[in-house]
Image (cartoon, one colour):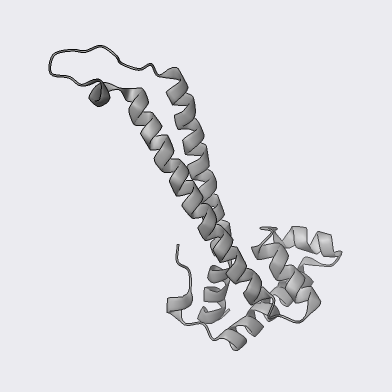
Length: 150
């Protein structure tokens, strides 16, 4: 494969990696919510200490709120990225190639699963995939600056 073809594949894989990153953040947020439910607030007033400075539950809740905002921002980024990838894939007029690209880069399906779904050999799927990537590179002449933004 050429560098341009590999860059195109990296570009198409953006949604997958953004989705993985978002799922990790969601899992982290769930852990923090669980931790906050086990943490107790500190309402004791000790000399020189403010409850807000020593309240672990409050700190965790602030972190959970910030994580929720980051998850929402990343979710919007995933949607925008998927839309760009969909528009790019829609430029492929060959039905099989278009389907393979959709399954691979929007459905996150392996080549073996695609071959099974399409009832054909994996080598056929790989060849059609490579041909589709070549078409995208020729039609869209990607530069390195247009590639992955992760």
